[in-house]
Length: 94
Image 1 (tube, rainbow, N blue to C red):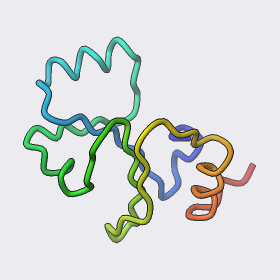
Image 2 (image 1 turned 90 degrees about the vertical axis):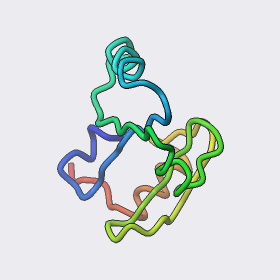
Image 3 (image 1 turned 90 degrees about the horizontal axis):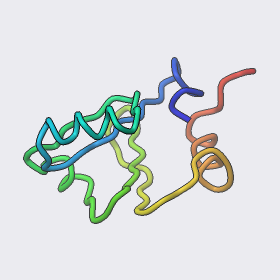
Image 4 (image 1 turned 30 degrees about the vertical axis):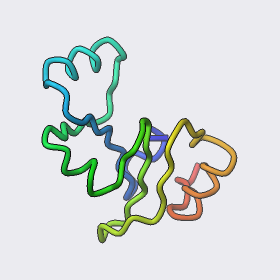
């Protein structure tokens, strides 16, 4: 989804909370993660968006308003997750 919507008003950030930079960097390398990763070292982002488990997905408008939140594994490339994203941000023209 991140690669497909690149160039649109759509940003995906991975947020890691309260782990050492070196631990996160090693995980990023091992998994081949290419999207931006935010280090939430003090837990402020986690608290603001009420993260209670991982993964937690939060959809935020450009104005900073939270419009959706989901805890646990979700599919964003089809089904209800895809329909929600398409309703919020039309998919790119093919």
